[in-house]
Length: 264
Image (cartoon, rainbow, N blue to C red; front, side):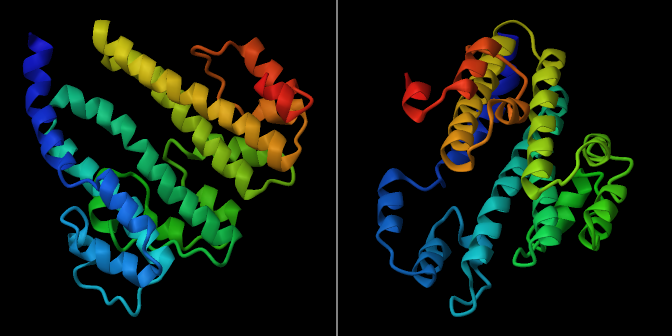
C-alpha cells in the first residue's frame, strides 16, 4: 500500500504527459511526409512538440536542428518528472540523468572528431547545468579529446575515459562512445540495488536486464555483419552484465562463423 501511495501521484503525472506523445497513426502520417520542412511544420502544430519549434522558421530549419531539439525534448520531460518526484525517487532519477549527460558528451566528442557535427546545446543548456556537474562551456571549447577529458576532471566520467586514453592506442569515436555506454549500464545495474527492494527491484532488474541482453545481441550482430570484427574484439565491446543470456552464450554468438550460424 505504501508503494501505491508513493507512486500514484507520479504515475498520474506521467499518464498526463503521455497524452501528448505521437500516436501510431501520426507516425504513419509523418512517414508519408516528403521534406524536412513538412516535418517541421507538422511538429510545429503537434501539442507535444509545438513549444520546441514555435519561434523557428521552416525555411531555415535543418534535419540536424530537428534531431537535436527532439533528442533534448526528452530531457525536458525528465525535468518535469524529477520536479514532481519524492526524495527517494529523485535519488534513482539522479542515476537515470546519467544518460542525458552521456548524450551531451557524445555530441561534444563528435564535434571534436567530426567537424560536421554541431554540438551546441542552446535548447537545454541553462536547465541542464542546474542538474549537471559538467561545465558544458569548458567542455564545448575543448579542441582535442585530451583537453576534453581534462575538462571532465572532477566528474564521474573522467576516470573511465582517462583510463581508456592511457591504456588503448589508436582510439576512435566508437571506442569513446562505447566506454561511456558501458559506464552508464554498469552504473545503473549497480545502483538499482541501492534504491529498490522486493517487487520494485524485480521490475527494475527485469527492465534493465532485458535491455542489456537485447543491446548485446544487436551489437554482436552489427559487429559481425558490418565491421567484420574478431570474436575477441566483439566480446571486449559487450556490456559485462548477464541477465537471461549467460556469458558462455554471448561468447558463442561472438564466435559464430557466419550470420546464419549466429541466428541458429
